[in-house]
Length: 282
Length: 288
Image (cartoon, each protein chain N blue to C red):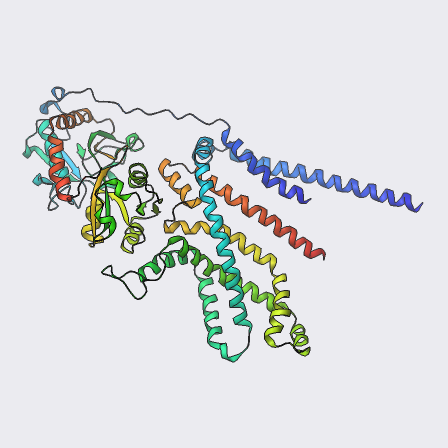
């Protein structure tokens, strides 16, 4: 008797799930199909298709853009590591209460305020063209700052690292602050120093908590690597696409570049979703 | 459920090329008509000019060197002034019958009637523009100039091959950008900037070894923007950047002006004018 009722409940649950899936599928078809029909039926679609979705131009431009995308990925990976280190360092400086490092704390606060406050594209521009200006003398000779780098990939990457470092330091700080005060007290009580408590007790817990928001920032960073194109960076995917678009007056190469960025950002977004769901369960 | 959430965007991506592929329209090639008119068909007294017996020629203000001298198109000095008077002569107009008017570049290609018979203003001929206006046969193919800082290694280049290792800077969407790739093909990809100012800045700050701009820009760049820069040499862009006289769409004069230019070309007069006003004034050796 007991087993029968359980089986019935199971069947009902399955039926309900199937019905839900059917409704979802139909509604998806109606909404997406409607949007597609609306777009395809609009009078501008022919023009849009030719200038943005030309398959000939796509096929022609894609290999070069793909090659350029490799530079984007390398810049992204290096900058990401730099951001993780810089962000954590700034967050720690702002958390530690030792009076001796007050000036450092002041600099850290100024840094996060200023670099989060400036649009990233402006920062890339300022650092990319400003630093080489510092390194150049009026008469073309040496200056005390001639050692400064002038490589545009390096400078663009540095600008991105500074911008995202400021965001990420705040993410870390939120994580550190979310670790209960009792954890620190307990660590001190068992004889750990303030530093040891931070290193072995607080930071490990904080970092684990801020995984998803960090990943979110990295999705944003991955796209923003395209900003270094304004420094004239040769062989960057977005710049290659822009060059192709401007020489043919056809925007399809930009769509090709967009698809490449999506191949990285969409899997990262899915990973983020899964991660957060896993945490919600545990 | 999670598989569905991934499947939808993936399906959309997969569909994009299909959407793109459906029914792509073949572009009809617009052919440029060649001139069959000879100068005999163009007697001055029968030409339908703006005012009878007078040839009205336009250019923009300021009229600057090496195309005009002393901002005065009427003196016959400067490349485009000389070309305009030479065309007038071919068509049988005396110097006194040539009247100059000011026509800003931005309004010169607006559709509709014009206040001039033809306009000479360093205007590049493109198929798109030719849909709005008439162009004469080209009277000049703009050369590209390599500009570098004085005393730099790039400033000592004497052939295009000498620049094979140079870091170039160019502006996006310009003939210069394509010219670097096609004529020099440097081992390092050129830096491509959004604006001409960024190109100039990059040169000034030694972020690039040399920049490529068209010859008139080089003239202005080295004289005013970066005096410490010098034009190392000039070269022809493959495919060229051809300048033509601009006329009203469907103008009865177009073929005659073209015939005059062709005559100047075959007689060698056009080459002489170019040599005198552009090659000598800009003092840039031709790089091969």
